[in-house]
Image (tube, rainbow, N blue to C red; front, side):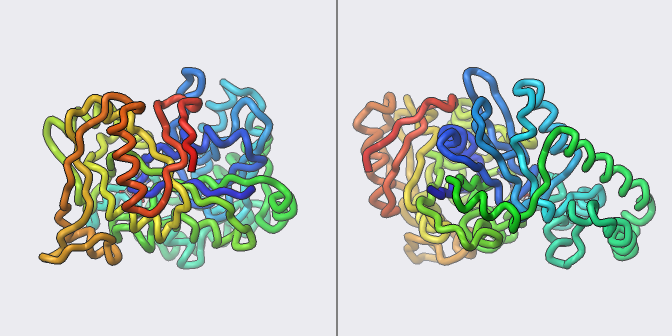
Length: 405
Ligand code: IMP
């Protein structure tokens, strides 16, 4: 079985929890895009873990995790992540594989991002993700392959010559290379295996795989609310760039019962004030990577339908509906008014900027056994044309309700 799990909103849908729930049934958990901008929170038997680079393998089990070549990796934070996981699960690093073609996030990428943020104000996670993907597309990113093959130094020198004076003024390429080599050796010392997407194919082919997405489809570089997006392909297109040979059996889209986003950009159903604060507090809506308070809003069905079609999703896992339990009334957007025209499915990202949401009011539910909650689920299913296959009932990995579909 090959399964993809990714977010259908603006990230933070609770993918970490969903992947962690499903993880034990798969031989491989593969991260295929993004980098340490992701913050996948997992709560297992009371222990809270936040993964940034690492795929959510079954911590106590024996399956393996692969950081695929479409990722961008900050070696020093990856090592910190491994070391802190080692303190709880000694020896776990040996179960991780990293592709030698991942692009490395270098110190200047973060500097470039800070400079760009002043001009663009995207509200990035400041992890250097965009500038690293930019260098990859511009054909001069540094990979682990370069460290292994002594091609890193020449490339660093060439990059330094091209980079802005901001970077040039302090960068010592020889010192940077030494740092990278030290980090690379530490990875090996921890037992992480360096591989590549061709050598690993045979193993993947005969295994069950869960492709773990990061961010959400509305942050996709191509289909998201551009330019307020991340720099990677976050859904199926991101998987197919290196794994086009894989036939995916299930595309599981994760959606929250309400909506959040961090950073700037259009957010048609955003709410402010008392209700927003209540939702933020009850849902713990603070960034797992940056700690920023997340913007919050009602469920946006037109946006969800757009994601379900184009990400795509063949089923939905609904998360955090328990956060809305006890609300007397809730709202759900069922169409947009775009310049006087009714729009049910946004026509590309332009509509997100112009949308005035049209809401329906629903009576809130007391708990997830309340028939009023079923009505909410039916509305989601009817609107999107996709069934809700699982409902997360709390933060613990085990708190999951499987629905008959
Ligand atoms: P970047 O990925 O750091 O370049 O940030 C670009 C946009 O994506 C910003 O609005 C970030 O807040 C958002 N973003 C990136 N990663 C995540 C995530 O894992 N969850 C939610 N938002 C994210």
